[in-house]
Image (cartoon, rainbow over all chains, first blue to last red; front, side, top):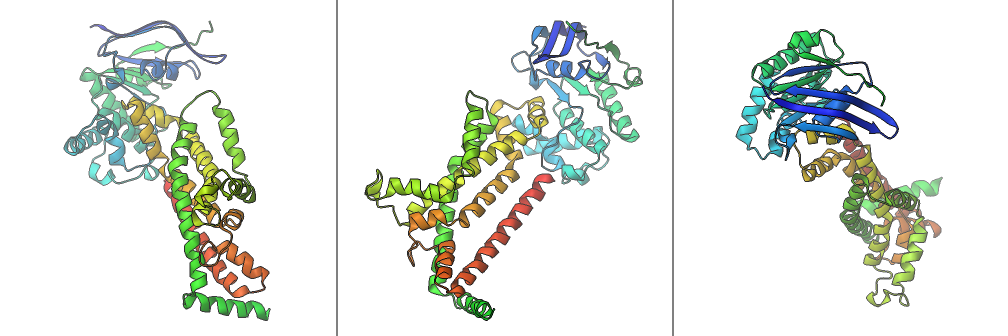
Length: 210
Length: 231
């Protein structure tokens, strides 16, 4: 397998606060990696850097994919996902619309991704607003909105925190299935059971002060 | 209190019989207010969005100026515009003084800081995860901006309704720039003021009822926007 991400002396600061100070990080294409570490160790910061939402303050981050527009290949599921003030169908298909997909493609993608995250009746959910959803449903809908894009790299920030057991099971099944299909996955988690459950290589993030 | 009940009865009579002077004041009010609001929205919504969305040197100072103008007394706006459009003023040649367009200019200046400041506030208050979510879904910078506007649409509705409420109930600008001319620039508020000073309560009460109905409508709209925004 070939290297997907490689980072050296990666540092991200906000003013005087160093959020991440990582000497080395690398992962291969198709690999599943679990980032573990204490609160404030920089797991979420590393995910934002890998998602190219932010730039490192210093150090280098190499990505082997499409560097022209990496956000077309990489997508990040935030720890507390944000759903737009719109119905579920609109939220799930938003990424497809941003890419100019037609209604037929949106409908097909919606059904497939909603079934994949464990909603047995996607049509029933289509018109519901974000205020009518439970925490677990929001998390799974946000995950569906990423799956619909068929990303080659999926970054997940604590995807099973604040969800019920059924939602956790559904989310882990989706991650395992994506992993089996060769999608590269980075999952930040506090839960010690998650890395073995995903068959993931565990990387402990320690925010060593420079 | 007999005069009050008499006034109330006469007021209802004026409204039911579509009294010319009363309905002329209602028409002048709604015409000038609507025109002022439309112009203020065209200018203020993009300005407010830019002020809240972008970062540039002097942004904080501009926000401070815009916020300060929220407390601009209406008579002071009337005075400043008066100086410009009076027959000896720089815009005197256009004959705007004591006309509806003259009032529209003043009311537009009154509404503009509300629209600019509160639009900027709505953009700044939007959850930071919204932008991150759009970016992680592959949105371009233009798409992020457009979806940000979509996301604050109910807040923008509230901003416009609030500005309308402020303009429709003001007296200073309408009195100074409109001149309170019957069947022309007399608005509901200036008519209430004049009729009350004359001791004629009927028309004042009739117009007061209409103003209250408008206020009720405005607040109903505000509540709707607030509810939609939360859900």
